[in-house]
Image (cartoon, rainbow, N blue to C red; front, top):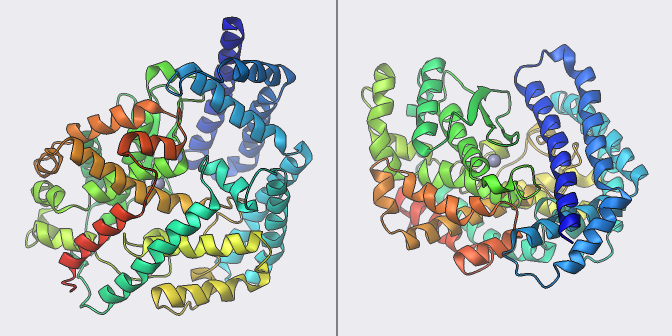
Length: 501
Ligand code: ZN
């Protein structure tokens, strides 16, 4: 059996190498490649993806996984080898369940659909995008139908991003959020608006990047095993052992874009840098789920970067970097500005309080689209009605509505809920960290981040992909994902900020 385990590990390591190489091609495309290289690069990328897929779905892999699954059936869940076999078995099942012809059709539809979506969005032309939206949901229904052991077709798609999570659980959590958040947003909207003009003064871009790099270093991001570059849409890419790259973007007249965006990607990067050496070149050297990944970015961006303690400590550094723009400002002004709540049309620009209503409406619409309860041609009207109901806004155009995100065009159905699951998990984990280490709030106000990072390393990062996200949360916090700590955090923070009663 030891031989079989060694062989499986060797095969999986080679697959990880190919995936890592594809990730480097992707990073290169998004950061440094000249635009003209696009078509050639998409062939290279697709070939590596296909190779990795073919290496996974061989008969030999099937036999190895079957034999080892039987062997490790009774092993303790904590055992690294048992976890490896579990993760490999899940991936193998997923990859072999969908017919190759359907996978190829999906790839093609997505490659074409994203281009059409970009044109449709630029021209505010939903009718142009409609046939592709219909095609993608039709193909996704076929993918979902390949999995018969699910309560809802959406379960099969959700499982790819959030292993083990059920649509019914997401629905219940979102219902709880909606009941509390809609009135909270309305109560805040009835108060005098917060002033965030201090963030919209002149900030020299090079200086902003230097400040952001300094923040990343103090949070604990290791620049000997990572780097930060510029890209149009910020992202984080773990490219294999000790090579974790984050990107950011910068605006000369809006401080949050670079600073808060960098903290967000840094949180993703710290997670990737925290996977243990023993999992190198193995499928365990990944996040437990997209939601858990997002919990780490949100924790550093919001629980740390949008806290009063952080600003009390960090403001003098920022003021010294921008004396002309911040000479008359103070920590409290900036704290209030970065926590301004403003119902808006665009998800990626949304604040902590309204953000989850954006993901909630997308979740509700995509479940209905997948289950055939909503026709794609009716999606814009359904979208606009929900924005009116949840955020109190009239959507003026599809560009600011149903056409704003690339996800559906890219075939990423069931991806949106993971953003909110991450928000919820960020507070649940942070509160557990503080309960285990009561010095953390004081440490953060003093600019010391090692207690918090050390706790995250030991409890979350070092586990890699060993456990399903809810198993990991239960092990670490004593319960599966819950909305309660998150809702209590928002109410506490924003009742004080907006003088709510
Ligand atoms: Zn993120």
